[in-house]
Image 1 (cartoon, rainbow, N blue to C red):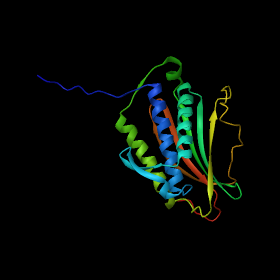
Image 2 (cartoon, rainbow, N blue to C red; image 1 turned 120 degrees about the vertical axis):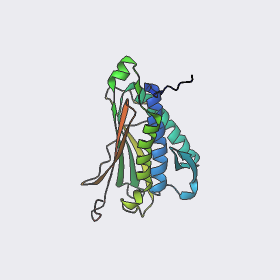
Image 3 (tube, rainbow, N blue to C red; image 1 turned 180 degrees about the vertical axis):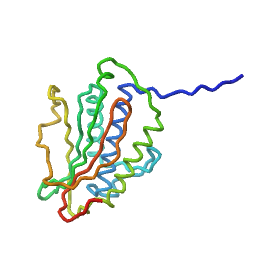
Image 4 (cartoon, rainbow, N blue to C red; image 1 turned 180 degrees about the horizontal axis):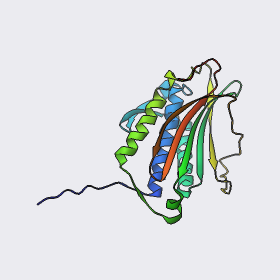
Length: 207
């Protein structure tokens, strides 16, 4: 007689770090596309997380995101990464217009003891889908960026972490009295990511 045994998906520290860093890569692409920081024609459509996603074809940006996700994965595996912030600034004035904040909680027991956790890949994907849909619909709850913009990425790590030479110390690039929209979160059972976006607009009503 044939039998079918239900199996659960085992999540390791390295596997969780890979999931989170890949998520950041796609999030950066999506934010830069949907907020118009890079031209629409410089992106191509791919399928990821069961959704149509946009990926840049700009070689400089592709290289930046690849290096970023590799570094974030390393920090995630060490349990040293606390937060990643994508900042959108006015190209003309350098004024901070938006801060996309991804806060990270790490199960330190997994880092210290090398343990694994269990969670369905499908469940993780559904949680990521919810965030990606919110990013894609950001035009409905964020003010239009009607000027040329640039971006920066800030990483908040444990103080005892040696900073790679490709990263420099930075001010937090805060927005005074910002409007804040809390987005969905997702959890691999090893890393939890809470997402929110803050923006500058005195006349815009929060949704």
